[in-house]
Amino acid sequence: MSDIQLKHDLARAKMEKAREAWEEALWCFKGEKYPATVNRLYYSMYRACLAVLTFESKIPVKHTAVIGCVNKKYVKEGLLPKEHGRFLHRLQTARVEGDYKGKEFTR
Image (tube, rainbow, N blue to C red; front, side):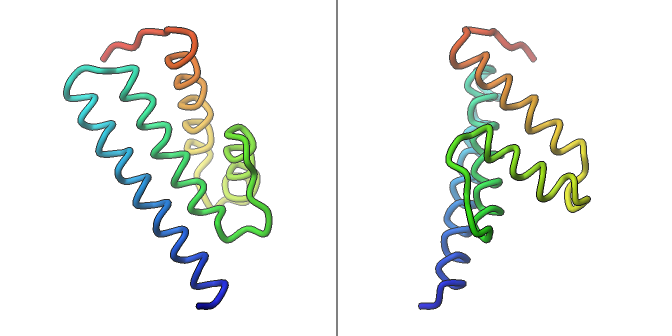
């Protein structure tokens, strides 16, 4: 199997994990579990970012670096709208506040 095929398979697996987290976010939202909704939504977006970055020569390890890399390579270059970059940053902040600082979210 070629290197490019391995990367395609890895990206596909990461996108499947992103879809699973998305479905979990919807389930949590319907159950009014808003902190869990934010968490699962964040991980859905994060894993989608990792899928995109699979094709880069160097993939960051830390969450902030992954988001920063996507913003630098895709948002600043105009491949993704600026609103997507801002949304990723706000979602990351909300996830940290919900998971580690006990912030409550409402509909």
